[in-house]
Amino acid sequence: MTHILVVEDEPDIREALAEELSDEGYQVDVAVDGHDALDKLCDTFPDLIISDIAMPRMDGLELLQRVRTDYPDLDTVPFLLLTAFGYPEQEFAGRMDGADLLLTKPIDFDELFATVDSQLRQAGLHGAAPTQLN
Image (cartoon, rainbow, N blue to C red):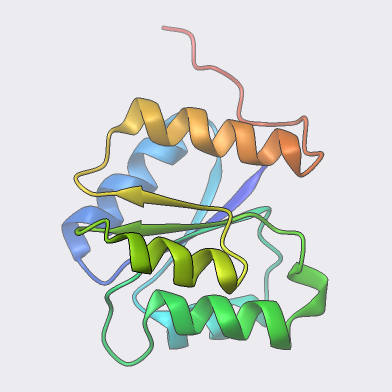
């Protein structure tokens, strides 16, 4: 099963992301900020990371830098950044630090699912979440 780490400080958004991704068939772990995410990375190896940019203690850009420099085994893991603002300089900074894509809030879940599936396929994980049949 494909494993996704969601890093988001806003409880409602974090829960919505986790629920929607779980409903799509992904195994989801959550973290409340960058420090919490780094703790989780000691015990788990996600196939994809989704992180908010603006968070207390350690923001998404710092988390991205730490993941790309301190966790060489995660170098090829897709890293998606979420922002409420969508400033071009944030996207540029994220890309320079190794982010694969920046998505703007509010989150369009159809766009998120398509992006996650595309990033996983590009990473060679053809076992993207199965489509749920109702």
